[in-house]
Structure formats: C-alpha cells, structure tokens
Length: 269
Image (cartoon, rainbow, N blue to C red; front, side):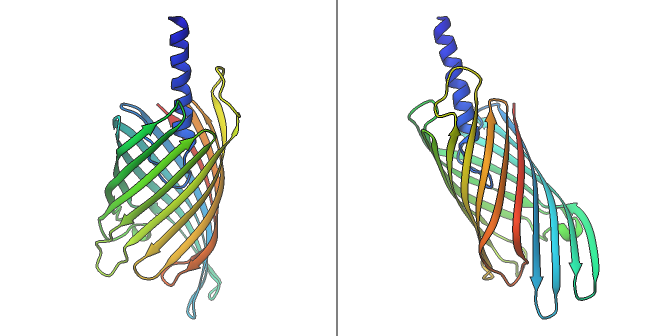
C-alpha cells in the first residue's frame, strides 16, 4: 500500500511538471490547471521599436507588466484574467524631444474549454481546446482601446516523451468603428533538455522552446517573429525567458519592433 501511494504521488508530480512546463511561453496552450487549482503568472515584456514615415521619425521603448490569474473551474474548464500596466518612452528625432507615459491597458477575461483529450502516459497527452472571452477597455488615455472586443480561439497541444508541440489561433473582433480585426497565430516546439528521464526524487526540469508568433490585421498589417526560449519548472513554480526577433514586418499603422524580451514567473496553487 505504501509503495502504491508513493508511486501515485510521483505520477502526480510528474504530471504537474509536464502540464506546466512542456508548453509554449508566449501564448496559451490547451493544458488545464485542474479543478480548484490556480496559476499566478507574472510577465515582464520589454520591446524597442521605430516608426519611420515622411512626417514621423520616432524611437519607441516600452516595458509591460502582465499579471495573469488562471483558475480551474472544472477539470476541463479554466477562467483566465489578464491585467496590463505599461511604461512607454517615445523619442521624436525630428524635434529632439521625448515623452514618457504609463498607464493600464485593456483587461482580458477569457474561458478555456477542453473539447477532447487523449492521455497516453504520466507526461504524454494530446489536447484540443477552445478559447473565448472579451477584451475590456481600461479607458486609460494612450494605453486603452475605444471598444469592448470579443475573442475566439482554438489551440492544440501535444506532449510526447521529451517533445511537446502547440498550435494556436486567436481572433479579436474589434467593435470600434473603423478599427481593424486581429488574427494571432502561433506555433511552438518544446524539448526537455534535462532530465533525460524523470526519477522519483526532486521533480524539476529544463525545457528549450522555439516558437513562431504571427499577427495579421484586416487593415493589411502583418508581422511574424521567431522566438527561442528556456523554461525551468518545478512542482510549485516555474521561470521562463524568451526573446522574439522579427522575420517579417509589413506595417503601415503600427511601429516596427526591433525585438521583444520576455521574463515570466509562475506559481502553482
């Protein structure tokens, strides 16, 4: 009986690492935290960008803090809340002036429902989920939209041994007059760098991640990033780092980003 209990505990811990580690960094996976469980995810994202037009010569830098609360309502249903706070500096090279500002971005309230799953081992699974929700305007000057925008998405996640795979698409339907709708599309491959095999001791793992992150808008703007990253995951917390580098930018309405750096910390309750 004691051996059975210890084995069950080890499987539970292994599943926790697999569920919270072998997934994408820069977008939601199809995995769920489980009924009654909560994930607190704190992100810091920094980017530098430029806007070059006949009338504008701007250099832009921005630091964004994103706090996410992910709570398992049921085994296959999750509630996700995202809150953003941003610090931005804009340098105008035409006038040699700079402007600094900070404020709260729009709030996202989303639900994730697992449509089907196939578990083939303690750390091996295939899951397909639908995402839906609303982006709510904060009303905070330069950091808020002018509308309340519905969100709808699909995501597929597969974990098989040391490899993981995620594929996702998310639509944002902008209800403001004349504003563009957005389609965000993402893919990720993860690989467990260590350990080669899980043991029965302390549960921890390091994953390498490689993503493609794209955004297409109905106004014709398009961008695509390649995003390598690392994850260090334990049964209670995880830390992640990613850098996003542009491989394609065709933008008329927004600045072109030079890079995006992300540092993320998660706690599991």
